[in-house]
Image 1 (tube, rainbow, N blue to C red):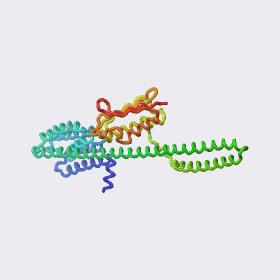
Image 2 (cartoon, helix red, strand yellow):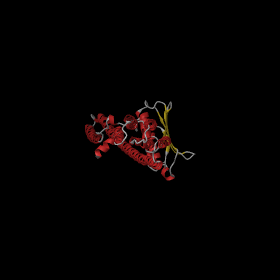
Image 3 (cartoon, rainbow, N blue to C red):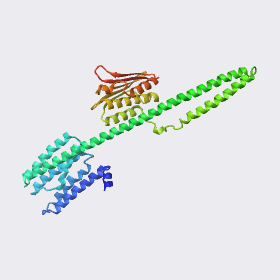
Amino acid sequence: MRRFSLWLRGKPFVADSLLAGALFVLDVVAFVGSAEMQNWLLFAVVAVAVSVPIAWRRRHPRTVAAAVLAGSLFSTLAGVAVGETTNFHPALLGIPIMLYTLVAYVGRRDALVYLVVVTVDSALSVLSYDEDLVSTIVFTVMMYALAWTAAEFLGARRAYDEAVEARLAVADYDRDRRADEAVALERTRIARELHDVIAHGVSVMIVQADGASYAIRKDPERAEQAVANISATGRQALAELRRTVALLRTTPQADDMPQYGTAGLAKVVEMMTRAGLYVELEQTGNLDDISPAISLGVHRLVQESLTNVLRHGGHAPRARVSVIRREEDVLVQVVNSRVGTAASTVEGSGNGLLGMRERVAVLQGTLHAGRTDDGQWLVRAELPLE
């Protein structure tokens, strides 16, 4: 049963279709059990009109709500026209179901308008049939109140789950980013060591070879010693080179490389927005044909800045991102329009700003980070294209 429930949760149209079928069956059972059988065609039309649209309630909530309400109104008017004394249709439970759907999936404003119209329809039904006024009103109010309350509760729970999921996604994204940066820093360190090994070894070998070439005839012993030194230096350099290269055996696959450019920035903004950070993104000029190093630098600057805003921006943080390609450089600006406490936004409180400064310096650019005159926090970088 639990597996079936989890399966239905991933297939909302199937679940809503089963709900529509259940309402139709309830209507049929109520009609068969009633004493009046002469208006079976009208009863069937109302049952279909009210229950069948429920299958599409989450795909087209406004349209389905209007269709169910129209079926209820048709049931009232047609029943009065043919002389029925009651308007008992269990399928009319679709009305509070649609009220719940509007509150949960559309918004309170649409649901409130729908509730007003439904109230008028219910009043028309009460006045048109011989029903107990007090009990009908109490039952109707309880049904609508229950539907609204359930939608508010489940909507809040769903919003909380989505926020938690978004936060976890950002945390995973940030963890992967920091892991990638740690790997990149390690590879840079290894590259420096590789350069030092090769440059030092080859330089010594060149000097020894020059000395041996001069001394090979006049001082064979000295030339022999120089050749021995060349051999020893070469072996030592080769051993160190092999150890260094062994650390670079595992390289990332091309398919696993992250996506940068406009698509990458949009992905970062989308993820941060889902996590609760309101972001305004402005992109000017073609950002997809710049060099990979500059594109990566822009991506990392925006990513790190928005992560810092999310962490230290206080309640309901907001940020404005501008990435502008100019003739000679790319301008990146990230403004946090809601700054948290002074302790949380002090420059140098973490490694993020230091990493941004190092990245911009490698790209021969300039970086400014600090408070503006109006108290906002600004990160501004200019990265030359050449």
